[in-house]
Length: 480
Image 1 (tube, rainbow, N blue to C red):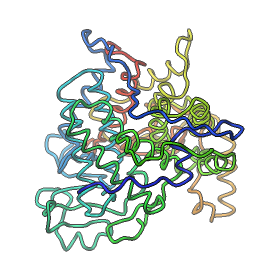
Image 2 (image 1 turned 90 degrees about the vertical axis):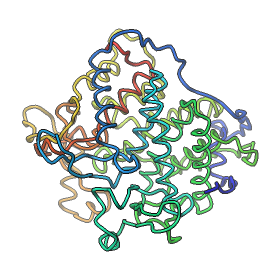
Image 3 (image 1 turned 90 degrees about the horizontal axis):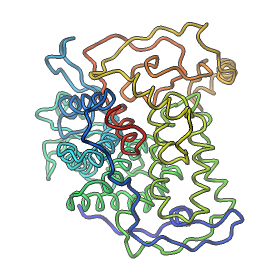
Image 4 (image 1 turned 180 degrees about the horizontal axis):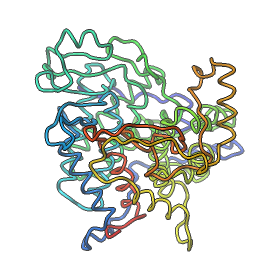
């Protein structure tokens, strides 16, 4: 499928992608010439023996390759037939496969850049192909599937009649994807992981066909979104029924990556002034304090988006505009999760958020290493945690206020998501609830959670993403 035209950017994105005006709204016409590059120099010491953090990453890498990428390679949770995990049972939790496949792809791109490992390189090339298949199997330009599988062999697919009763299931009978199936009603969170993986892989893989495929696919998605006012359009020409509208930060990220991977001559070479009014609108669209108390997964989406914006913005934006975005990230996106025992968020902050190394006792470095150390070893199967001892924490008063208010006005639960009383300080990683991606789960939860079931095994992308980002960013070393 050929990429469509590189559409003219709307006013807001013109301002966002190419350096905006200074704070007093004076125009800044500077546009960094294409292409720019912002990757770490390859100065890693691979001659030393692997320490426990690297060994844990290698174990998760092997587990993922063996059990968590069936069908065409999309990341899933694995269910085994027996507690000893000697026999694979079926695919579980595949509805969010695209975001975790993209996150896994980013981890393997970091891994390859650090190690030069041929398996990591093969993983990057294969996962780009998988995410490209997620895009093209739908038959709709720019519309990415949640999951892509094979009818005949997948443990998920239960026949055409079954598929037709499932809202998100589609089977393909003709064309290059005949015999496959895919899950739709795709939301913007899947596009977030897809973009993170593609943008990171583009800069770190030394394979021209793979880079060309990324360019074509990014442009196809970008043009569909711009042509449809930043709305995800599904196979029947209608907006997706689940979170179809791209928030300003995701619009900015897609625009920046599209320019970065193509340098298309039709892209505008100058921007309009980024007015105070437009910036206020950007800030209003990204109020993240509520994500501290409900819909915590949104914090992960924000950090994934802003990692790419800041990494590329450093070489494409003017200094005044880059500093504005850096300040916005620190005051809005990251501030509510700062030092909350989340190695993924901390690594993104330390690598792109203005962190300065070298302090004798650095709470960010200390907590990053502690979080990676406490993270459970592979295979990370489901576990039960009892309710926290009330003497071990202080209740966050804001959470209690919101909880009490929702009990009085139940409609608030529907409007903003349920808020439960939670701890004021985050619990360490080994005291957080089990899930397929730990970093999107609240570390402040005090209620009992999970269940002990060694048959369910989480894919481990959470550890791989946090660890390989940290080593790529030179925050940890191989011998640690």
